[in-house]
Length: 90
Image 1 (tube, one colour):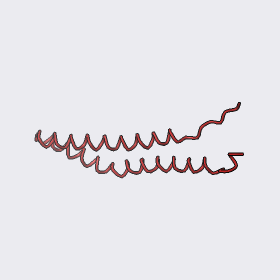
Image 2 (cartoon, rainbow, N blue to C red):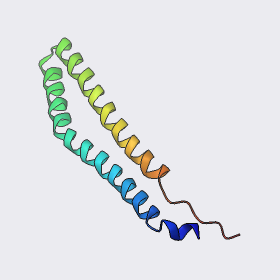
Image 3 (tube, helix red, strand yellow):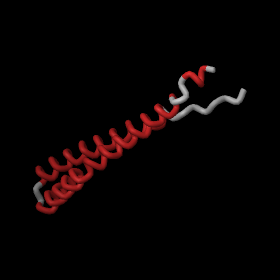
Image 4 (cartoon, rainbow, N blue to C red):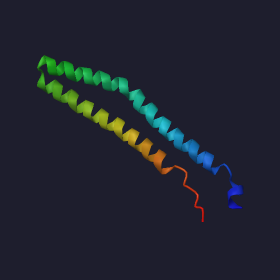
């Protein structure tokens, strides 16, 4: 009887789940061009022999990559945690 009171609870949870995953993937995708640009700048600094600039670009690139990975991990974690629970047969 309790299931009939709110039949759309699963669909709302599923919508939130997919929305969070989509938002995290879109955020990561939005940051990818900046990552590519910073990677290129780091490689140019390495080739030019400027150790200080190369170290700076490497640090910026590392922070950006960690940020993208954290966003993706949060999105994937929320997607996993909010999944629908299997109903017991007992």
